[in-house]
Amino acid sequence: MPIAVLIATVAVAGCSSAEDADSGDSAPVGTPSIVIPRTPAAVLKPAKDCSQSTEPLEPESQMDGVRLDASTDPTHTSLLLKNTGSLSVIVVPDARFASRLVMAPYANPTDQASKAALNAVINSGPLAPDRGLPAYVPATQVFIVPPQWAVCALTDDIHEAAGVRYLRDKVSSAEYFVAKGLADQLLSRFQSNKARPTLIRCVKNTLQLLRAHPDLADVELYAEILGAESTCRAGYKELLGHDERATERTGTAVLNMLERTPRLLETTRLFEALARA
Image 1 (cartoon, rainbow, N blue to C red):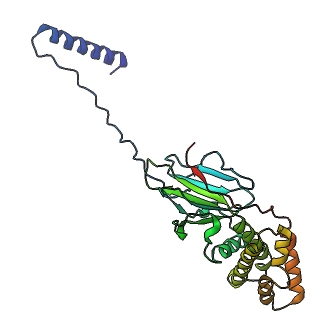
Image 2 (cartoon, helix red, strand yellow; image 1 turned 135 degrees about the horizontal axis):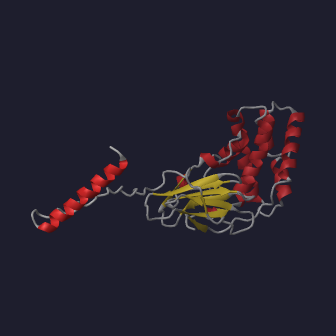
Image 3 (cartoon, rainbow, N blue to C red; image 1 turned 120 degrees about the vertical axis):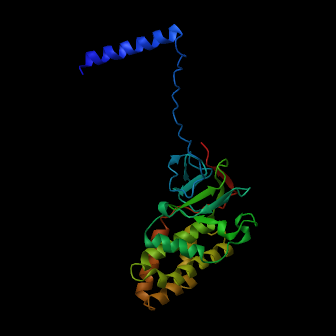
């Protein structure tokens, strides 16, 4: 049927329907309503990790040597903190424990030396009570976060923004620098599991010297840690097969690196950070 004829036919049909309704010969026919089905609104759920924490927040930088790049997800139930400062921090949950801390492998270094160094710091023994942390915080919720490492905070309540507390820590800064310097030298020759006891020994030696000489200048501290009488040097000397020349080269290389590390600063009080713009 031609289009013009089709339009005319529809028009006539429409007029006839209207006339029939006006004449009262038949009951009026109501216009059927159009029902548009609604799509259910997406149910917001708390974040399962910090992999979707791509919404940037103001960096946390309350003190010298510390900068924590912060980001969250659209629900604000996650808070990813990456240490882009020069010194280590210790992170614990918020004061009400509304948030919990988990690892963030997608935001952490992947090189073996960095991983071995942090592993040595973590496994060198429990943190002493004088580190400025509340005694009620469980060990599983205390995260040492050196430069370039990250931590993730999550809350299970969609109405609760994720939050943490953190402090700048002198001891773990020194421990990580020493362990990282040694790992850079030793892991080129040994598997990380073989070097691990030596790295842990040197981390413990660092803590002992800091406890015994808290006011020692950084360079003097590192020289003592790597010195001829130290338990740290005895450890890597043994690992190197008691090769005196190799031991001397290793100690010198590590000390040169440590002399270029950022200056150690005293441990601070706790500060708060929230996943909120």
